[in-house]
Amino acid sequence: MKKNIYLYAFIGVMTLFTIAFFAAAIRSSYAFPTGKENTRYEEKMNIIKKCAETYGEENPDLFKEDENIYITVDELVKLNYLIADNDEGEVKDPSSEVKTLNDIKIRITSKDGKITTKIIDKG
Image (cartoon, rainbow, N blue to C red; front, side, top):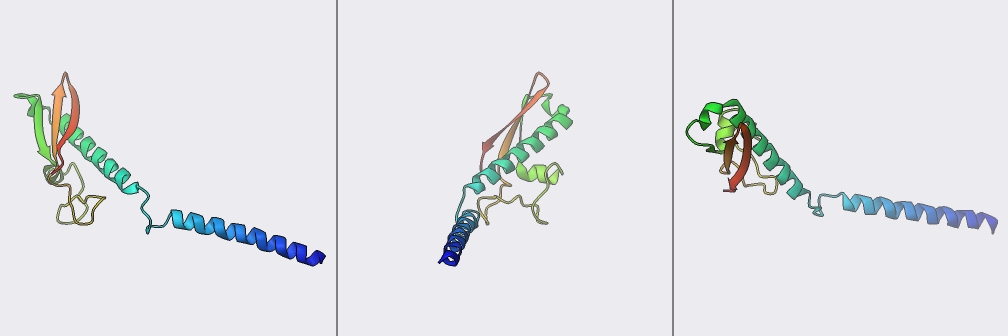
């Protein structure tokens, strides 16, 4: 009988570990959405804004006539300020397999020597 107690304890512990393992595996599985798509999208948009800001900082002559200029993601790719996701020059939308972000319009503002960016048109 004493051997059986150890066997039952071992089976109980192994069952708990198995349940914990499968719970963790299911949680991190790609089959179940976790909301990471939105964070990837936000990260991509922050990268785009930072590239537009760099473009504005490196080209101060653009602001001689107006404090605002407008540029698209596609233009940033063509000017080599943003790296495309493929050879066609497309910047893919992380939340969709078919959408691209190339048509997004960004306003770059230079006020008192400070460059700010804002995405004004999400295509």
